[in-house]
Image (tube, rainbow, N blue to C red):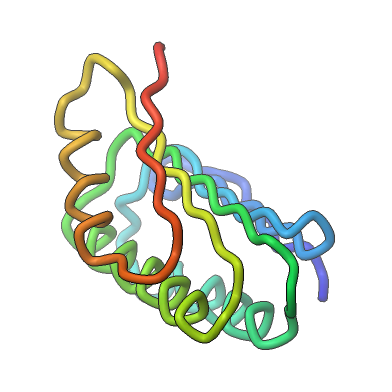
Length: 128
């Protein structure tokens, strides 16, 4: 599989999914005009990648400083795909990074964490 890399823009996050290192990164802000269109190819890549891995540990790092409600729904879908893969025996660790001085970042992470059943989901405070 090839690396999936999408440079961040004004309304879209930086995406770097590296199949060789088994690292998935989403960073920046997410409020694209068409959230489903933007994330569609990302989900296609993710599903193909997850189908092809075995015992590897997959690390998912999410550092979003702002996202809108449609991106929140997409993020829940993203974490659900990962959690389902973990339920099927894949070793997946998600890290939700939030800024110490932005309380809502922690709250969003806790909301996502509540719906996770099978994968490890870490809340990590960062000083900015």
